[in-house]
Image (tube, rainbow, N blue to C red; front, side):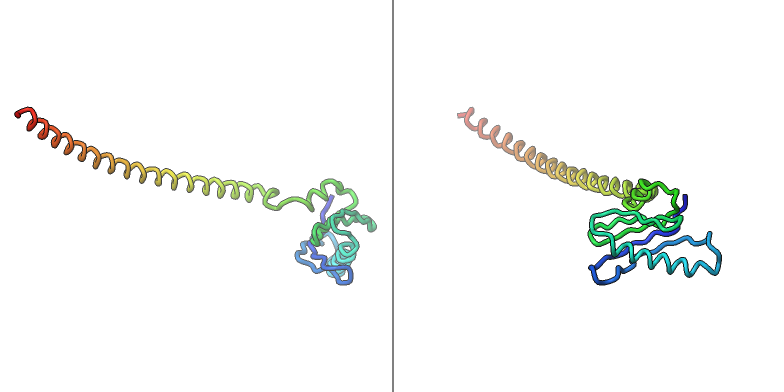
Length: 164
């Protein structure tokens, strides 16, 4: 079970050749002088299969002991060149997977970033609530001072009335 190459191509239309956006290949198990022609073959077959795969479709093409699994979604075509023993289900899940979900470190980093954003929002809301509490304390002390003045004024007024 070996993956020889993975390609991502942009399929622009029926008449034009697909454009290679990304290409990763491992041709180390081929002879040194065969490697360049194998890479050219991968690009040629990749473009041909991508051109013939309708949008929204998956297909597998057999060539000698290799299979080319392809998936075309919205004009982007992902191709995997694998040996004949590679499971089809695993091949298509590889072509469909989100790289951030596949890499555990990226997944943990994304979750950490989301947690950090939530934590910042919580701290900001606590600080805003603290500022509101400070404002309420100020207003209550002003109200307390005003009520004490009102009490003293009322006491003086009542003393004046009781003497008469």
